[in-house]
Image: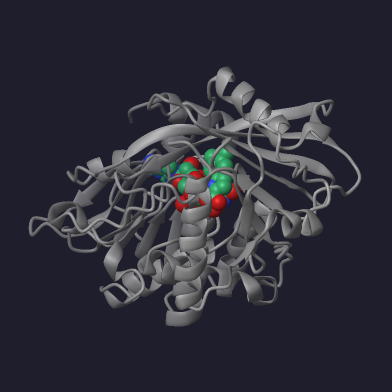
Length: 416
Ligand code: FAD
Ligand code: PYC
């Protein structure tokens, strides 16, 4: 049994000092119909929908660390569907629709709060670009409206709209169905509901290889705790997708970067919506506990570290104070990072792979939390039917061969 740093980490967490001997690497008695790699919201959600909608519950979700310890519980929880391209609004709006009933569906309060996402425009380019988004969204039946600076101020009273500032507010695009949710509850809600339907969730067990039969189809996964046989494998291992796909001999168009966020001390309610600004590069909301939730940009260098560079946080806080000078004296409580994997067009890959029985859901980059229920639902559909749903059909690998890209690069106020 090979020991890697992460396997030792998993060992320390599990408290099983001798687990390799307890799980000898021999042919297993049990064979799962489906193994999902990665117990984030996307992977757990896919397992839940496979069991709930398609009656397939002989499933294992395998997680190298702890359930929901990846990006699912590290993000700034912004949920919206105000994207430009038809393919994007379709996939993200499908998710927003599912967010709506998710607490009832899972009997777990995901605290989805439709408080609105306001994207501020500070220059003529922003105004033109956001107005184009508003029109495109409305043509697709997605709510989004243009607000003048005065209307922005009326909606968000703490906003300073004086025009003598470095970055004057020249208007904003407001999506009211958008908002935030409680991230870890999404992972726990899907995990509990999937488990109740018979899904096994195996934590502290990194997948280290993908075993294939002579005809090339998948046979199962090698893990730190031994081989696990499976008829189909779905990979939903954000940040590490290219490493896992490499285990099957597939080279993926992905780069992994640290992305950071931070929260302030809690204060009374002051910020009633989510605010994003591409020009100064800032995004901020206030949690129900009162903390300001602030997100940064990605590091400029690829890395698998869950710590990002300090100067990125400094830049973020300068940007927040640029828009909201009233926050200058706030104290920050803690910061953290996650690893996001990004594709060249900044849109995800969700579908089949050239290998029989191997499916992938990756490349959501800085924006996959909002997609969680939608991506999970579509991933389950794709695995169950062995073909993509029409909403995720455009998100196949083929687009990197044909050049038919879904270039949503500037969709979020996140530098990458
Ligand atoms: P994860 O929750 O990361 O789950 C993947 C899991 O796979 C992990 O738990 C990992 O440990 C596991 N894994 C990896 N390799 C292996 C292996 N070899 N074997 C077994 N398990 C493995 N998105 C938004 O929409 N809105 C936001 O406001 C937003 N803000 C963000 C802010 C930050 C700081 C970060 C880091 C991300 C942000 N995102 C946001 C992006 C969003 O968090 C992710 O796109 C989304 O959570 C991905 O979900 P997931 O379930 O695919 O991934
Ligand atoms: O996609 O809205 C988004 C987002 C905000 C912060 C990170 N991602």
